[in-house]
Length: 181
Image (spheres, rainbow, N blue to C red):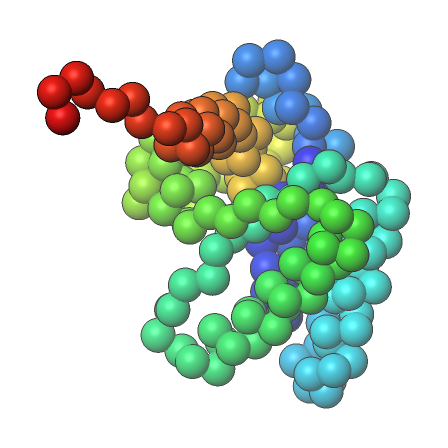
């Protein structure tokens, strides 16, 4: 599965494999950088080429990304939104489902604290994945954290979908008439 920390200047990418229980095996992590002085179209094209190359190389069956949220700077949000669009489109072209998580959901899943700082998150990701050194740069560590979050939450998502399916089937059945009604 692929974890993505979307960004226009720096986009973190990771690939992990879910093991038994809560085991997550890191396969790759890195950052795609685009020059801030380049045209938007050129930057998006570079991101697109990089994510397509990662998807071709690693063949992920699912993509997890950080959900876009308003950070106070509209320009930053818009640039990040462009990057998110490129990543979602790349997954859609391959029929790969995309799941999105807020930063606090990722922090809570990985560290147990929805307000954990970057240092706490890096320590936890290093520990969880059994890495010899903290992943660098921070965007790669964030992409790994997003991937771990999804690996750990996916079983609950599947249970929820199964329950929704059961509820949908049950609601389609004809209600029984009560006697005396």
